[in-house]
Length: 326
Picture 1 (cartoon, rainbow, N blue to C red):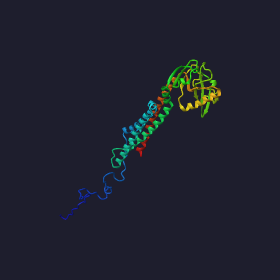
Picture 2: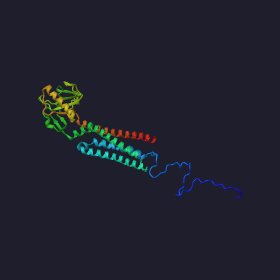
Picture 3: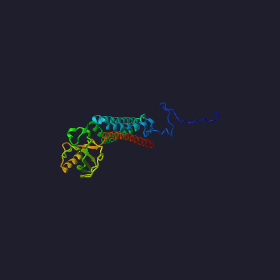
Picture 4: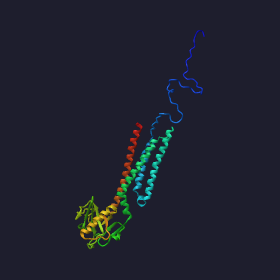
């Protein structure tokens, strides 16, 4: 028109037969791999930063597992009914494995493109819960053997008063846990004996003036508090306390076997006898020793639980920093 040529700019997009805009040649969209549902190839899953609640759960749940198992493994329920504590431990394990199952399901969902759950922290809770359960079993066992079992053993046995160590026999007080002897009771250190097998097991007769010098059924004992053989310089328990006329029963089976060997050696060496030898820690106040078992058991339970909490905090913080960084 009037000698002028009308120039028309090419469209960057044209209408496709399917009614969709086709992509400009050479643009970044042109080289994109089409998605046919599911996760696109070479898609990297985004690292989901955990919230405060997730981090708190990663600390608290494994710690509660440790605390619960540690308590059950040293409680009176274990002493009086071993099946109860074993069943409770099994329940804790099932709960920990439950987190593993949920983590596996979250992982499968993520492979299908559902990013609603992050399996990382569920897996972490599962693993650390199992670690907590194992640690609780170990700490609980150590505390139980060292403090709670001796405490429950002696509490479950009888208490006898005014026992004449020279005239009475061991068969008369077979179920004794605590014995209060007559005020004239003493240790006959001239008939003490030490038996060595890695440790030295020391024994000395508990007697009174009414003893005929032939039979001794009550023995004060101690570990590594004398020398080996006869005349062993016995220094066990409150051996030099003139007010000590009581005793707390020694109930550890392994120790009693070695104390029995030392007592038999004393029988042969001093030409004496024993109808039913019983072994005790000689002292003035047995109830104080029982209270010490109890207080030490509580103290080490608190220390174990506190240490486990500190451990969980440190490990969780280290894992969080490392995971988010990489």
